[in-house]
Length: 295
Image (cartoon, rainbow, N blue to C red; front, side, top):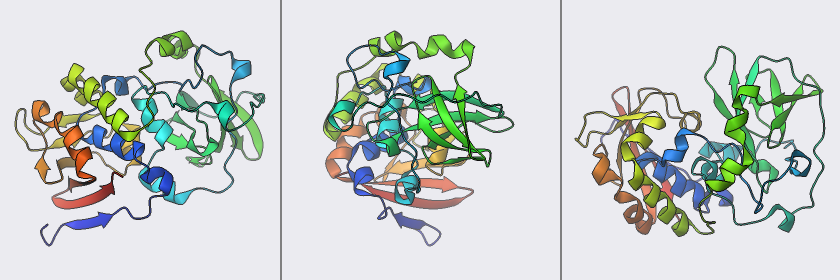
């Protein structure tokens, strides 16, 4: 790297984040994304069939922020949610079902755009739009622009703590069709349990519509057909959680230049086999890279 390059090793990632699915998901994002990323999976189904609201699992509040996990920007469950992937573990394997709690509807100027429920409460989160801001992804325990704290997540709503008061934020009525459980279940791919299986699924989906996938998640080639990188337009909340900013250009992975869609979609499996990835980003003329272990 040149003198102006800044190398940062992500040695503070927790064992859970380092386990592989998030890293492979990140790699998939940075080399071309599945079409499903355009329509965030509203709910990750751990069961085999559609469930009613009364059967939803409660995702309890996290009293202390897990700072190391937040360094990565999002959880394993959130990453799988973007790809429409279902966790192989059932909630009943880890904890007993908890009856969802009720709360009055919040009057805060917030809009619920998506939810990610998980086997472990710290893996849950939601995409929330605040008035006058871009939509963003919040994990359980996160502060929502100083207005409230996300404390519980369900299939059709989230529970907030607003000045010590429990309040519910529901999906808007017009979003109802997008949250249909039957529709989500019908789109589910096969269950996956290992990073390699995740790579196989992601690679197949990247073949369907690489250009559409690229556009749908806020990236565009710097120059069509040339390996000059992908520029981020700032509109994808998951990538913002990775500390990418509008105008950032993802230049290369493991020294291999990015920007040619047809070539880049072939890199996924090869990079996984290398065991470690180094992603180079250009920001305002300055280059920096971040290394991620894959195993």
